[in-house]
Image (tube, rainbow, N blue to C red; front, side):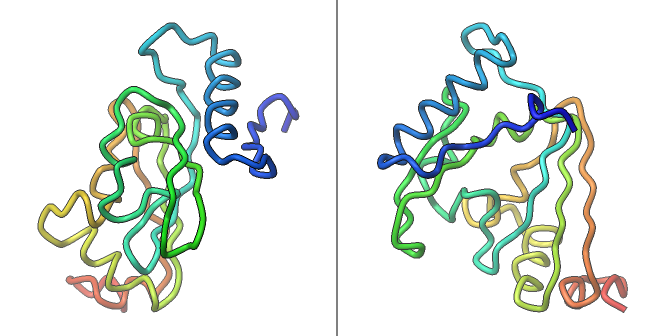
Length: 153
């Protein structure tokens, strides 16, 4: 893969807010975006945490409601620090959103995200529906164990 296709967040900067700002600026330049335009990634690879978070979008965070910014930094008390993440509109503009889920610890969150009622601020995987793309779920047996229809067998 050409190194120009790798877009690294500078997580080593002192300020997570500054790192998010610089990453968004980089994406806007790289994709030659106009105001309010979103980048189109070929692929976003996501997981689900045991608490239901995806990317670094955590339950009930303000970042889940962000519609203008591409990248945000937010303090996450459970992680005892700041996390930098792309926003939901950016993730939903990808050609492919692939969820890679493994392990028994994620089974409850996976079941709730796929089969549960809409709880968009708790199980953010429900928010990921690429507008002009596709979603693929790659799930191991342990993570799928609680899904209906024998998916975990």
